[in-house]
Image 1 (spheres, rainbow, N blue to C red):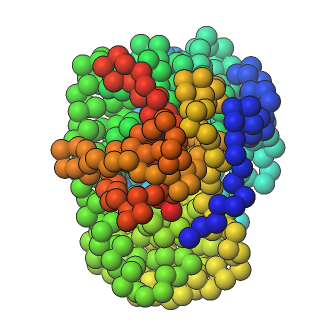
Image 2 (image 1 turned 180 degrees about the horizontal axis):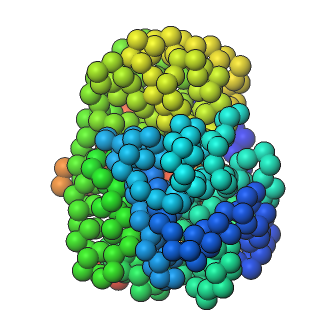
Length: 534
């Protein structure tokens, strides 16, 4: 069992100091966001886009089927609507088209100028086709570039070695939004760029960008815009969540999976139509489709996760990098299944779907392990790959899976055990008496929580269980009533969602939990959520 000897005892003052150190003393203001001209080639790209608008050229935006790619495309579409200018948008279908701007996609594109959003940094072949066909190509992306770059008119990516943008951990939608800020100047438009922050904040949260510096500011402001925007999709999101204020976790756990489900299971166009709907009725209709797809996604994911877990456990000793593959596993859920394996084994996981001798899949990481780097070191076995430190996509022939698995685990021998420690460690132990609305208010002041600013987790050590009740229609959630110390007057209620907790023999529990606000029937209460039992 894990040792908890070094876990500090916290009170409200020490907790406030800890959280202040984590996010920095002062928040960046919107006016302090670094100038988009610092993005390498952004000014050149903006001039070309403005020129194409003035000359009435055919402009096509090619996005991606995840939340970031859909949001990037939506921001582009909404911006051009306000010029107004006829913009064509294409989001590839995961199953028919594959990823990003590809030779496949180009077969059905007729354009003078193509702008990619959240993809394109590895589109070498597509760039050559554009050259041959006389199509100018502007790539905007945030994924890690390889040594060889596509031959495009301009590449705007904060991770390019030539780029001097002061904060490189931004998502695809941010790159697109910053570029459009320059297009606005070039065309002397009076479009307020703040109006897109509702969509932008969803992309930043969903793409698990570190919530520090400008990301923290944009999400904080974006959630405020989301609360008041008349954009039909934002109205529907507010109605659906039905809360007095929306947090980053509401977006991460309730909204992002729904937007993502379209591209995972059917077609990302459904989600794009939702974000760009002209009326609330239209937005509602698309959101209902997303809800249905999300339910389907959950079932598929649960089924595939169960099979993948069994496959990994049957292999005997769990390797440092888990590679699980299955015939005809649904391509759209392999990324989520990889995340589930990471949580279960506390090791990076690669999950592959095999069909007709070809394997396609997703990788997820944890702690301090750069999964993209490990995959790149073993690219000789792959037909394609791309991504960043915490998540990546890859493709290979089925016959190479075993060799790839051995080789990537060989590469992982250089990792130290500390690299595998998940970043969600507990901050300390709180006294029961300190858990009140004043504490909740203080915790709320450090929102938004997410990557690099996780909601604080606290430890309960050897707490005494008074009672455990199972809840929900399928009795899959647990409500645990406990006392921190045997003779404490105050009891605590911990909710464990999707987790059936059984009464231990000694009626004691050591676990971590978070504190959040629960709003139900206009009543506000403190909610303690159990995350992990040790």
